[in-house]
Picture: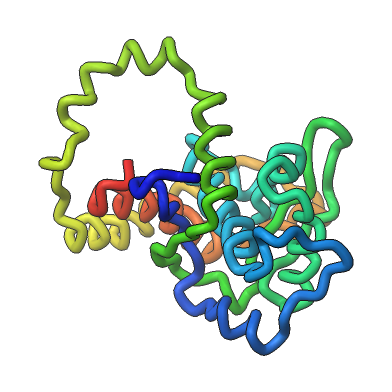
Length: 228
């Protein structure tokens, strides 16, 4: 069981996604489903969350290189959600996500991205399934860089309940930064000779700008709501 502090785990989903309504209208049907996931919602929501959360956690994530997809380590995902393939297929069947075809055995998994309808700004949400939350938190602790944490330990005094942020102003700055993102992407693309196939798979400029915005928004929301 998780403690009260960990009874909810913050996630981020497209602002126009009504996941509960979709599940009620079209309940998932799996051949084998463990009792702890009988409501389905949290497992589905967590997979969707990763599409935005993984780029947020990687510096200079290259959306062009990934063709707009977010590569998700299926080995890690399977340890948190054993039946992840069924959930991904369900999300595809409901036209919520698309799955890429490019992968390398043992190196790179097929990526996921939202369908055009759900390529929107994200909003904060949460999951509450104790076993899933525990798995996420345990895996996170196992992958901590303790040496790096020691070097940055002096920052801890600043990251406390007294830390505040002007969220409205921060989001305004993120909106203003879209122009900077646009310039960077255009400049980067001008310096690359793309093949016809690469050009066909290249995400739209607006999609890249939105994905970059969402990635930065997660940081703002985590600080404003003390989810550090």
